[in-house]
Length: 589
Ligand SMILES: Cc1ncc(C[n+]2csc(CCOP(=O)(O)OP(=O)(O)O)c2C)c(N)n1
Ligand SMILES: [Mg+2]
Image 1 (cartoon, protein in one colour):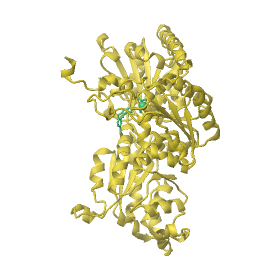
Image 2: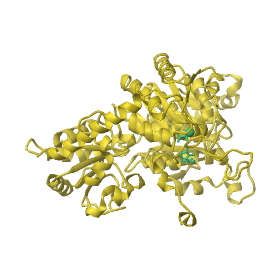
Image 3: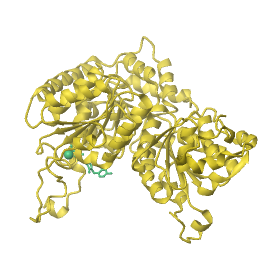
Image 4: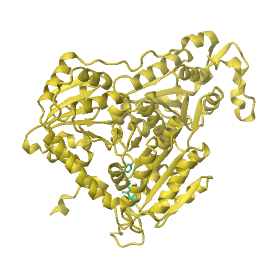
């Protein structure tokens, strides 16, 4: 245990408050118990934003050797924690002040829970006695009650001797079963409390096996294999749960041994390389409509998969048979009947299936796989022409063609992606080659994850990060370019600047002087924002300029923002989900 008080802190003016608590060698305080509890559980990084009552906690954590990444807004610290959780299978920690800081972090916590990313939001809070009587404390808010419905679990610690239990419960809740967000409420008074140092040390818990393997039942495995074997047009659908599981070799073996075509959801791209001969990405609508047996692996039948119903699935031809691998039994039958549920952790479930698949397993029928390959070749040829074209200003395709080549050259780079058209085009154009290299808007299609995810990806992996951002999407977290510069992170942000939300050409339907709600300042220079903090700004009006800027950014590892000027007429409303916009019944007539 390294951080008992006798070790002391550097006596600088900046941490004067912290120093006062270093003088008594026999005791340990709440601040250090929190730090020690996290470190004991191999958590070495905090993403946060200081202020009352947690400023000293951030200083002391840094003094005790933790990495403390300080953000400009808590939502982005929270998004960073969530992405760190997804990438590492350890809960990412976001640390905030009370009420407003907590609320700023809460969006990220709720988003993490929706996406099944493990994270813990730790917020300082005000005096319980005053909050509960609503007497108007500094930043008064009943944070625990507010957090509860929006996350997987929420706990409050009132006594220093319970910090170990509180942190242990938070870690278990975040990681076990279906991962998610956990809220940990730490009132200001807790940090100042002291315990005898030895008793304090003993009160901490090193969590043993926080995400226990869950072995599927043998009869469920047999049921799934029996159904899979009957399929004439089988399909494997990989979700981001499959990427999170880190069962990469097993999943690859399942696809290759059975010869079944697979479709990755966006964050499962790269689990097998997108160039794999069994990838059905370029024939998505064909395989969803035509498959007869579909095996879902860590993917949910939510809106992103049209709930498993309707035209997308050619429901008029009769229902599909589904096999679903999921850790949560309550996921089964959530949208359509699941013929063969397989409940357990993905690694164990896929291993169990593999054990039942021997050399005699019939490969997926050749007319099925052949038809998919044919469509892929045709689609790719069509796409190649668009990628190679050199229109001025750039199209989404010509700009993304450049990024596609860069990612091919650096398959270890992490791609962060948000926007509408910028997201949809990038998802289909930029091939991924390695697992967990693509982070995006996830289940909610949320804007604002960009810079938080980029910071986390760079901090956690040390690899280059390419953030492909719509100009609207970038605006949600744009101030964090200062954070990227401050920590000198190898992040290259490419802003797809089409002057607005979806496009830049809408007009004010009222005819007034204000521009339309979707339109931004024309010709904005986002590159200057990066230059303001010492990073590299590039203004790219051609694919060649974008290529040169991107290659330089990856080679140098310097924080870079490329303002990529895109044809403002090119985008469509909401990208590929135009139909989700409600259309007034009156207007339809
Ligand atoms: C938090 C949040 N607010 C608003 C939206 C609605 N929304 C979806 S995409 C988008 C921005 C699209 O514009 P841009 O990022 O410039 O991408 P483009 O289509 O222009 O490439 C917005 C505001 C959202 N998804 N999330
Ligand atoms: Mg835009």
